Every structure is written in C-alpha cells, then in structure tokens.
Length: 403
Image (cartoon, rainbow, N blue to C red; front, side, top):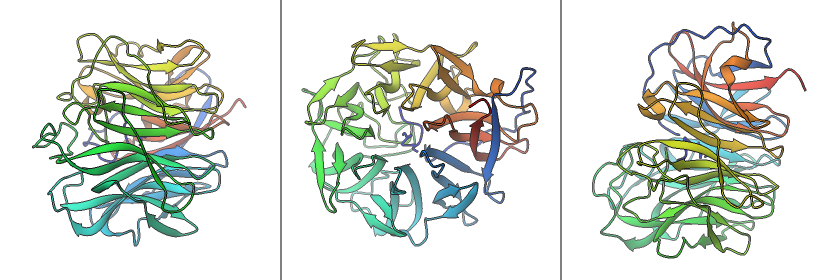
C-alpha cells in the first residue's frame, strides 16, 4: 500500500475522500513537536509527501478550478509547480532529493487511447512520470505504454516508479478498482529512470509474477516496491500487491516475505508492499495479516531477514509504515477496520521500538489533527496531512522541539 504518494509515497495518495470535521485532540503531556499548517490557506485540500534534509517539502494542493497541482514548500512558503505542467489539469509532486530535483506525475493534453484511468483523476487523459529540474518539467520515458508515475529520487539522480508496457493483459481489471483507478488494459513494471537523461531500466518482478511497481530508492541504488499480477496488484494511490520486493543494485529481486496474508485487491490498501528504504538498507512497508482484511506496518532489515510487525495504535486494527529516515525512525498511519480513509487514521511515529500517536506529541492548540505522516528527514522533521477544525485537509510540517 502506498498512501499517496504521494509513496510513498506515498508515493505519496493523490485522492482522499472528504473527512468530517474533527475536534482537535487535547494533549496534557509536554509537547515534543510543533506543528505548522502548510496550507495554502485558500485550499480545501493539500498533502505533503516528502521532505529533504534542508527542509524542502513536496506534495499536492487543490486549486480553485478543482484540479490538483504539484506543490513545493520552502521555509513554509508554498509554490505551485503544476503550471504549465504537460498540458493537462492535474499533477502531483512525490519524491525529492538534496539537490532539489523533484519527481511525480502530470497529465498530458492527450486522451488515453485505451480509456484507462491510470492516475485516478477521471479526466480521460494520459498521466506521465515527470521530473522537475531547474524550473522545468520533463516527461520520463515509458516502456511502450501510455501512462506511468514516479515516486522517489535519490541523490544520484535515479528516480523510481511504475511505467506501462505495451503488453495487453486479459487478467487486468476491466472496471474501476477500489482506489478509483482503472480500467487497466496494459501491464506495468517497476522502473529506474536515470541518472542520465532519457534512461529507463525495467526491474523485473519476482519469478512467477507479471507486473511490478517501485516506491523507494536509496543512494546505493537499492529499490523497494511490490510485484504480482495485473489482477492482484493495485497501482497508486493506496497501492498494494502480492509480494513486498527489494531489488538490489544489480537488479535482482528478493521477496521480503509477509506477516501472514496475501492481500486482497477488492479491499482498499490490503496487500504486501515496501514503501521506503534508507541508506542502511532498512525498509518500511505494509503487509497483509492472516485473513486478508487488515494490514500492519513492518520494518525489514537484512540482519533480521524477515519482517518485524510494528503493530497498531491502541484501538486500531490496521497500520502502514510510509517513510523512514537514516536513524531508523518511521512514520505512517494507524486506523480502524473501516480502512485508511474512513477508519479515523492517526499519524504515528515509530522510534526506539515504540509506535506513538503523533497527536500525543504536539501542543493542544495545534492547528491540525494529524491523520497520516508520509515522510521524515534525518533531523526528525515529519510531513503529511491532517484535518483542520473547519474540516479542511491540509499538509503539515511537524518539527521536533527536543533536538
């Protein structure tokens, strides 16, 4: 599962259903983080998906005409980088590196010849993986298909994501998927773009699988994501697959195992997927539990050789780890049986072997109740999105007070 990107991810989730206004929770203990509502103040929806070590934040924000545009925040100031895009109305910024290179997706002005809805916008237009560099936007190459999306980029300029092939697959879903994408006609593969312009390298799925998607990459070129079949693998937002996968820098694919479940493409975000990898090769992700109706966040390390179940916050039955920094701190969301949208999600921080509700670590007068955390940098700064006391969904930046 990848919540958005916006793998995040996610990539980081590009669409979120409306959430009813919530009364902000009051905390009595000493605050460990301060929270900033990144806005923009005029929008009913924004989401922050990634933050680099100099504090540049990437994400998405709704604009007055109802479209969603890629957004950057620096020193709390928003900047719409979705204009002019590739000619289509919608875009989203996902990952970014220390050099300020940003990747994500953008719609073109061309209709999809297969009438797919690859990025879930419902516009009928093709949606392409893109790179923003030095104020310009570049479409990244595909593998013979018409659509794709990029999730993260490392400091060597290698980006990862998913790209359609030219292979028609009768096992693909012919209707809408539970996350709003579909129908899907063509197969797709996990890919690495770069570091040189125009380069694209497919990452083959695990043996027996036919499709894949990549979410995260570190500076050693290790990539994480998921693989399966077109029938059981769901592209972002809320991505999910049959197998959580690590691709080593030589391109070899390794199954990370699971926590007892195989996934369920008919339920939102139920599957096995690796979302992020740090410089030490530690991996954060999501695995289906026995029964294939719930998921738990996991940590995977090569030393351990299997997933560590991170559990859930008290009262919940699901969780998802979406980001990890080089210190091994992880962030994500914990939520109830109704799923990641309607199950009252709460952003969590996993640190020193403990999962904590991020809302318990912020002042009682904070401007947002924090729903999902997507990214954390090495300084411990956390980004995601939360709900205001008027019911708007806004991107947030949580900054540690005790470092």
